Length: 106
Length: 234
Image 1 (tube, each protein chain N blue to C red):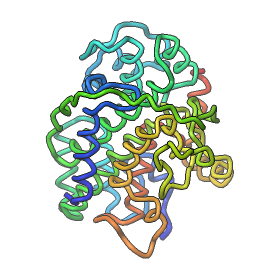
Image 2: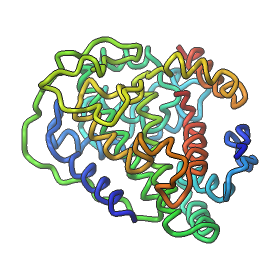
Image 3: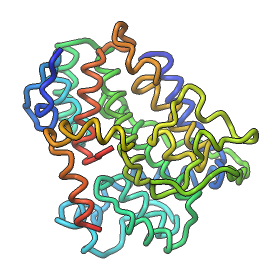
């Protein structure tokens, strides 16, 4: 299945993934702390998928809210071979801008 | 909720209250409390809104009496992890704590963050802070730990000795696996939870079968979006 990478990076982006819109809204709401937005996002995921999907999506969101901090708090670099394989993808997604910002901050 | 997920969360949460490798149970629960306080800290909010967080000084709104360097570490990891730098960590460590303690602190901060985010996103109330269990830290430093390409030392798979726990069982030893390996029990504490929230390594590329109520593509889409929201480049 083709996935639109750029759609992953911005709210409302097209991704080609099934039921992407309510799931991505759940991620945005969950990382934020607006209770009303979270409640609406939960309802949308229940309606589009299921209660079990809401739980499993929330678990992925929580898990990655944690593991991204593991990487960033320990300065864990991407393996050279993975970095080489992902050059084009990282450029498409604009991920390199995050590294550039860190370099600017010193 | 899946039984394996509920069990993993309960075990990870309760383990915070027990003595770790370098921190007591009381200290670990204080780290958990401080992690929860960080999103309401006015200094952290000002820094998060600034072009650079490093030009804004001040005092954190703290919930505990942990040392100032610990407070700075917990608050920044919780509120602005995507803009942490090696120079920041050097400064924090000069403020008074060992690399081993820092790694254990990271593990608790991220576990609390992950579980709290999960429960908030799923519509569940936050768990009460774990009970403190009396006990002494083991202070077990892995003999094979060595400087790495990251900011902290690692215990690489080839350097695991007979006295170390099986921290790489069913794990390939990617850089992200190694990130907390200086404190093997903390590494296992995190990964035993994370693999139930996401997927065990063997299931990640088993595309003929789905293990969750959302499929592989949906899982990876969510992972990528959260990484982008947190400005994580790994």
